[in-house]
Each structure stands twice: as structure tokens, then as C-alpha cells.
Image 1 (cartoon, rainbow, N blue to C red):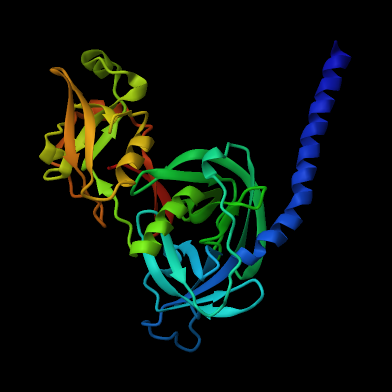
Image 2 (image 1 turned 90 degrees about the horizontal axis):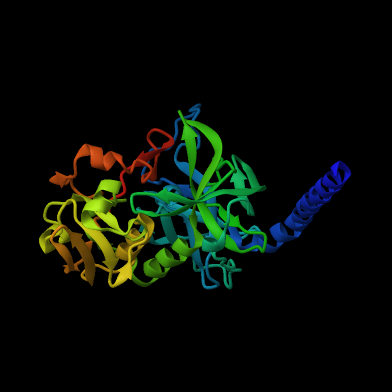
Length: 373
């Protein structure tokens, strides 16, 4: 029996090592294949005074990072933090060609920016993958500029697939790779050479970089860039509430189905929900006739719709079930104002695990914040 177990263990180890070798052998070819769709970006603040002779911060007005060739006709996707409030953007392609680029549109709530260059013809556009089918442990790789070391290859695994980003609730991929200075906006590829994400922030502690890179998904990038390309902005629906999972007491009192219901935890005064009559403590069972499964799904249902959309919420109160019709507002460019009503602290504390992650550049770390819709 012992010999049999040993044999099985050795076979399993052999399969694991064999899989690792296959991944390692694929990487050079994959990296070569996707290289043409990866670009370097230099963003310069032209409205700042030039550094004085001897100034240690000779490149204080220059940011360097990465971008992704999005389409053959010159569209490029990158991280907003790289190109925000700059006067000159220069793109360098894998063959050494350079071109000036202009900002087409930005989305502060996801950290995505869309650029356009018109000099280089027929870009090699990236191939998109579906980030929603990724699982923890899937191998991934990236190409970025580590400090001044251009086109550096990094490899790792997906550490988590359902981290939540803010200030809107959206999926964020967590990897075990560090987003080094110079790699902001770097693409994240699966082992088919398909784009599954883009690095926009690094989870850090007291300003020290850790082995946790956070990337927006390719699905979200496609959704945002489609709107930026058409309209220059992203118009998202806004309900004006904060929701959470129901407590056991609320499930019992309202007759809710725990897996298909949420509780209104906070209502923004004067917002669409408040105007329609939604109140703190109301249960939400359906959105446009579809069951409400979790906060992430509910948030996506709201923000994917444009402002002024008419939606129907299936509301559960002690008085019974009813349909509430709401005309969505436009998600503000800045966080919504402080609400005038909220549920008791004890009830809100029952859902501590439902938080969003927000990268705060001023403190150099990612922090947990409330998820508002």
C-alpha cells in the first residue's frame, strides 16, 4: 500500500513538473508573439518648470509606463494614472518607432484611459481573452518596464479572481506579481497570449511594494473603451443606495431568500432611489425581473445601463412584495454626497466582508472602502 501511494505521488509530481515545463517552454514564444501589441509610454508634464541644474529629480515631470495596442487604426489603452494631467504623450512601439498620442477619453472610476495616435499605420492589435473564466492558480504573464529596464517579462499566477475595485464595484484580478515603477498600464496575458487584464495599481503596505498586483479585467476594459471611443466619456446609471447582504434576522422577518436578496443599507438624499421611495431596510429581490444574486452582480446591472434608464426593483417589506419603478440618475464624476439615512451600525457591521478596494496614490496603498451604487 505504501509503495502504491508513493507511486501515485510520484506520478502526480511528474504531472505537475511536466505542466510547469510546458508553461516555461511556452513563455518565450508567447512573449515574442504578443510583444508587438505592447507599447511603452512616456507622459510629460509640460506646464511644470524645468528642473534646475543639479536637481536630483531630473525626471520629476516625466512618467513612464506601458500601454496596449487596442486596434489596428491607432487606439491604445493605458492606465489613467500614467497620463492624467500631462501635456505630451509619446508612444514607443516594439520596433522602435515613436508617435505622439492624444487622450480620447478617460474613466476615473476604473483607472482606464484611451489614447489615439495617427502616425504609425496598421498597429498589431492585442487579442482579447475572457477574464471571467479565469481561476485561482491560472498562469499569467506580463511585459513591462521595470524602472528603466524596458520590455521586462514577469510571470506568475492568478491569486484571486473576485477582488472588488472601487469607486464603482467591479472585478479586479489579483496576481502574485509586483507592479514595479514603469509598469503601470502593463498588459496581463493568459497562456494563450490573450489579454485578460491591465495593471492599474499595486497593493502596498506603508509605501512598500508587495507581491500583489491588481489588474482591471479585459472584459471591463472592452466595456469602457467601447464607450470612450464612441462618446469620450462613460455614462453609468446611478441608483443612489448602498446595499449589503441580509442578516439572519432580516431573512426571517422579511421572508427573504438569502442567496437572492440584498438589503438597502444607505439611501442618498435626493438620489433616484430616494425619489422613487426606496428606504433603508427594504429588501431587494429582483432587478428588472432577474434575481439579485450578490452585490457585484447588482452593481454591474446598475452601472452598465446609461443614465435615465427605467428599471424595476422587486422590493420586499414587512407589508409584502411590490415592484418599484426607478429612473436611474448619472453616476457622479466624484463620489456621491454623504447620505442622510443609514441602517443601525450593528446591521451594517454584519457584512464586513463586503468592501471595495481603492488605491490611494497619496498614501501609496490600497484601502478598503464602502461600496456605493
